[in-house]
Image (tube, rainbow, N blue to C red; front, side):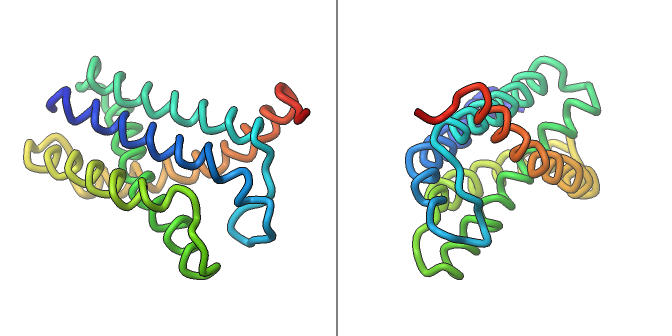
Length: 161
């Protein structure tokens, strides 16, 4: 796998999470079934940890490409971020008829970059469709379950002023 593709993954998820960090806490204050209200501090803590985990998955794959577990975590992150652009960002924007922070970078960066990485990995016979689906089904829900926990930790460690 080309090193530049891993860097593009890190850049895409960083810009996506930065977009969310800037606008999602305020956006979440309006009633919605897509997002509970979250303070800036708790959201920033959670997004920093998730971004760090994404970097850790990419760099771990770069240094340990032969590790099945490392590969599955990385491709699970790729697949999860593709799905994340659609559910909840695109869906929330359509249903709520207002822009959901993260949609632009999700659609313009995460979907194409992560799809390209997965495509290259398929073409290089590094992964199979079965591995990608399995990894995404495992990593995605883990990330979804970890986020509320990170919000609670962020709220305790960095209370709102």
